[in-house]
Image (cartoon, rainbow, N blue to C red; front, side, top):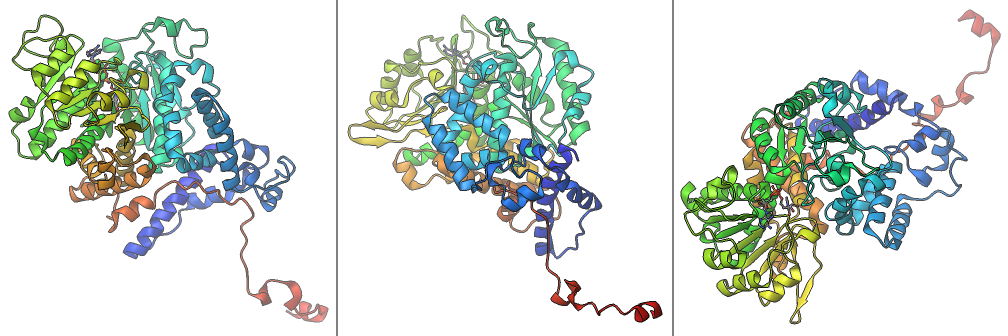
Length: 614
Ligand code: NAD
C-alpha cells in the first residue's frame, strides 16, 4: 500500500461527501467506485511504525487503545491517550516559550512533518498569532536562513539541468490528485530580492495557507521551485545553499524551460490544475502572466492577488472618506509588478464605476527608483506596464516634492525599499488631505515604507493606514488605532478555493475584482470605526468561504464552472469540500447484526442424522 494510495483514499472520501451532497440535492443515484473500494480495503494495511511516520495519518498519542492494538503500534507510544485538544495546548505552550520567531517557524515546520492534522488545527485555532510566522514577515527570514532551517524537502525542486525531463520529475510526486501548484524561481522573494532555491519557503508557506485558511486539503497542494540559478553571490557561496550554484539562466532557454513546465503540469495533473506564480521578478512576472493567462488555469499572486487586496482596502477606506474611486488621486511609490497590478485593477474598477480609460489612468501617478514617471524624464526607463500611467509633467525626484506636486489623496508604497515615507512625506499628506490614505505595503516589516506609528503620528491620527506586514495597534493621543494588514491571504486562498471547487478553466481578472468588492463589503462598521479597512485576521477563514461562495456563484452564472451538476447553495457546496482537521478513526470497522444471527447460540444442536439427510 503506497503513501499515495492512502492519500487518495482521503480525497475519495471527500469526493464521496461531495457526491452525497448531490444525492441530497439532486436526488441522483451514485455508486461507490471499485477504485474506492479497493483503496479503502487496503487502507488498513499501513500499520505499525510506518503509520506513526506518516504525517498525514499520524495522530501521536491520540491513537486510542483499540487503534493502537489494531494497527500494531501498541507499546510504541507512551500509555496515556491524549485528545487533540490537549495536544494542541501542548504545542502552543511550547511555541510561546520560544523567544525567537525563526525558532517558532522551525517548531511549526517540525510539527507539520510529524502530524499534519494537528499542525492545521493549531493554525486554525491561533490564526492571528501564527500567520505572521508561517507567512510574512517570518517566512522572509526563514527563506534567508533556509540553509539552516531546512530539515526535510517539501515539494519538488526542478532545475534548469532537468530541461527535457520535467514530466518525469512531476511523476516522482506520489500524490495523484494535485489540484494546486505554487511555483517560484526565487528571483524576487518578498522585498528581499534574489534568494535562489532558498525561496522555496514561499510556495511552501503559501500552500500551508491554502489549507489553513481556505481548507484546501494538503494532498491537493504541491510547492515547486524552478531552480535556474541565482545571481545572489552571497547566497550561492553559502556552504549551506540548497540550490544550483550558477548565474541565472535567462532568455530563450529560460522561456523554453517555463513552457515545458506548464505543459508537463497539464500532462501530469490535468488542464484544471491551478498554477499560482509567486515571487518571480517583474521582468518575467508580467510577461509570463500575459503568455499563460488564457492558455492555462493560472494567476500571479504578486500582481493580481496584491491588486485585489489593496483594492479591497481602498473600498474600505473610501467608505470612511465617503468618496468614489474616481474622486481620488493615487500616487504609487514603486512601479513594479505589485504597483502596476494594483493600478491596472484600480483602473478597471474605476471603469466599472463609469470612468473612461483615460479618466481612470489620469487619476494614477507613479514614482520609481528614478523619480516621477513623466514623459522624457532624464533618467530611468519608461517601458512596460507602468508606461500606461506616464504623465506629462515635471521630472521630480525627491519624494516629498513629488507629493507636494501631485497632491495625491492616496499614497501607496510598493517599492521594497524601506522607509521612504519619512516625516516630510507623511506631513505633506496630512496637510493636503483631511483623511489621507496611506498604504505602506512593502514586505517584510523592515522594508515597509513607514511604520503604523509614524503614519498616525505625522498625520495627527487622521490617516487611514494599511500595511503589507502586520503592525500592532497604535495609541495616539489616547485613541487606539488598529492598522489594517493588506495581506494577500485575504484573496488568493479564496480565489483558489473557488477555482478548484468549480473546476474553472481560467482565473479571470473579474474574479479578482469580485473578490476585492466582497472583501471590502465584509469590513464591518465597527472595524471601520477602529480604523481597520480589512476584517480582523481572526475572521479570515469565514471571510474566505464567503468570498469563494460569491466567486462560485459568478463562475456558474457566467458558465465558467465545469463541475456539474450546478449546486443550488454555493456556500454549502464550498463548505462540503473543506479539509477537516479532526482525526480519522483507525480501529476495525464493525457493525451489528440482529441478535438471532450474530452468535452460534441459535444454531440447532448437532444431530448427525439430520446433517446427513440434508
Ligand atoms: P518589484 O521589484 O517588481 O518593484 C519594485 C519597484 O520599486 C520598482 O519600480 C523600483 O523602481 C521601485 N523602487 C525600488 N527602490 C526604490 C526607491 N528607493 N524609491 C522609489 N522606488 C523604488 O517588486 P514588487 O513585486 O512590485 O514588490 C514590491 C514590494 O511590494 C515588496 O516589498 C513586496 O513584498 C511588496 N508586496 C506587498 C504585498 C502586500 O502587501 N499584499 C503584495 C505583493 C508585494
